[in-house]
Amino acid sequence: MIAPEFVNCKSCKKLFAKYFESYCQECAPQEDEYYRIVRDYLYRNPNSSVGAVVAATGINQGRIFDYISEGRITAIRPSDIKDD
Image: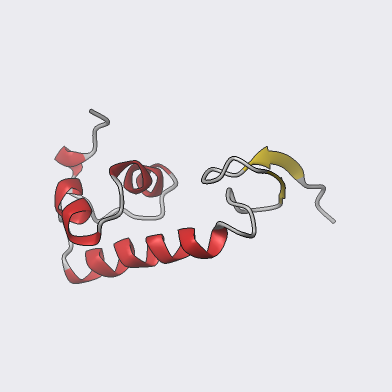
């Protein structure tokens, strides 16, 4: 069995035992929904800019950059991937 690492949830900052996810049990379902919204938008609108994704989905830019850095999404125009 893998020993858990104790970390703060990326969303609510509560301490929890991390096995794989970066979010606690309470936040994970909502975070998964945010991701699904972005993923589904990009499926329908590939190569959209970060700004277009934010405007269309209401998901904040920071979360979208997290998805990019985690390798969860890649269908964003490369010229828009910068942290200004």
